[in-house]
Length: 267
Ligand SMILES: Nc1ncnc2c1ncn2[C@@H]1O[C@H](COP(=O)(O)OP(=O)(O)OP(=O)(O)O)[C@@H](O)[C@H]1O
Ligand SMILES: [Mg+2]
Image (cartoon, rainbow, N blue to C red; front, side):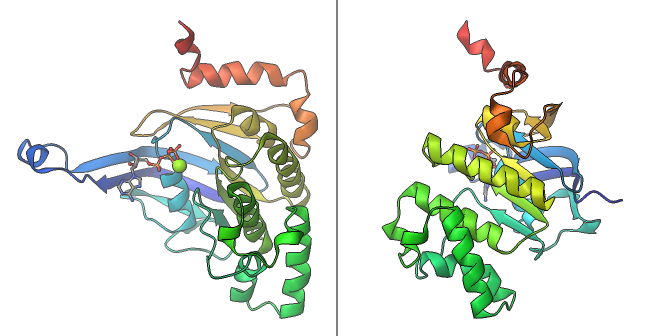
């Protein structure tokens, strides 16, 4: 069976906005964000991507979503080359991108409207998701009337609303307070497991990566490459709260810190 998501030898270069002196100097007119990235995510698997700021994580996710194209190499979803956004792939960007002229409920229902789902069915689904994300009291508010964490929760509700096969999530919980984060991690972990969804998940939170994933991919500094892959062979992928308390949890954080060269900073 084809993997749900596959990156095959993917390189992405961006034009380097050089000032006059650098131009005359013959500096590289391109920035290579990621180089030669290969990985696969199988059906029902949850994979986290970690790496230093600027190493190209969001760039990879944008190519997975079809919002951006590789300079070299290819991205596939279900064996088909990604060339534009795919209705079975939901993505949540690092910037929440809620539509400012729509209420929170209307934002959550946006993808369902596009899919042509009837109003009463949309209402049932948005009610449930707003409740799960603890936004029921703010359904009629506009994004600017919410805190950063609440907007993040609304964006999560919107992503889950379309019932996608593949979820691409860019730091979905980074703006949340520690407790809300754990509650939503639990919710997401359980939902992913119960519905057998496939996910690629970007985070800077190492414990979060371990708590939610089957595998963690570690990237190098830019140009980002995958330098290590760690299989999280702990029980409870659908129950992150319990997994956090597992005695085996302790060994993974230092391992990831060392792969990210964070442990070098102590001396
Ligand atoms: N649209 C763009 N135009 C030019 N350069 C870009 C563009 N998008 C990203 N880059 C560059 O590509 C590199 C990777 O950026 P990216 O946003 O993918 O990093 P990241 O790993 O997601 O970082 P962070 O952890 O801070 O979110 C950076 O050097 C960035 O400046
Ligand atoms: Mg990013």
